[in-house]
Amino acid sequence: FLLKGHSYLGEWPPDLPRRMVRRKQKGNAIDVQKFLMTMIKKLYFFSILMAILLNSCGPKHVKIVEEKFKDGSPKIVRQYEIKGKDSILLRESVFYQNGQKYMEGKYFNNQRDSIWTAWLPDGKIWSQGEYKQGLEDGPKKVFYSNGSLFYEGQHKMGKRIGIWKFYDSTGNLIQTIDYTSTSSGDTLSH
Image 1 (spheres, rainbow, N blue to C red):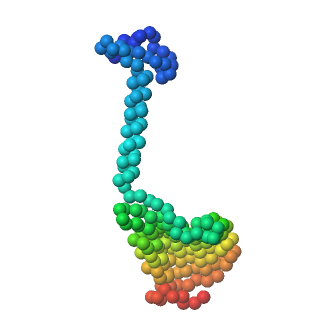
Image 2 (image 1 turned 120 degrees about the vertical axis):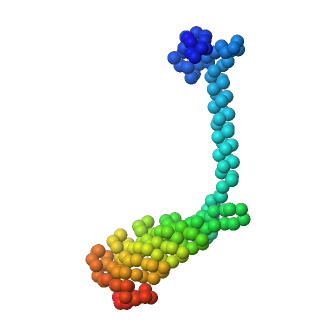
């Protein structure tokens, strides 16, 4: 059998990957399978070495249990990015004693940022709101324990703005408050 100018001993075996095939090359017999396995091993170890080197160069992320319940289960877990001697707070998770999440969200510059969510002990969403620079900024929704919407509205830099709607536990609108006429964001009436 000829392949690109090389002559192989015997017929081409149907189970090439499992059998040893010898090839004549410039008078030397080379074990093709052994050669390929050696190359694969070298490539594998090189890939592992590169992954270790690349991973050790970048910042590391660590989760630290900041506070525990009496039974030892985590109450507050924070995730940090470690850069040299500096640690940057990235995320916080707070738990109920039963292990369910109570609250979770991200940090930026050590202040609440992005969407923060709070849950009831049974795992249903209790509230969800957006933060920027540590202040509520964006939509806010709070729910009853049965899952229906309790109220919804908007915040701007920590103050209520626009129209806020309040509902009873069956989903009927019971009150609307307009915060556009007040600069303080305080409640006008309930």
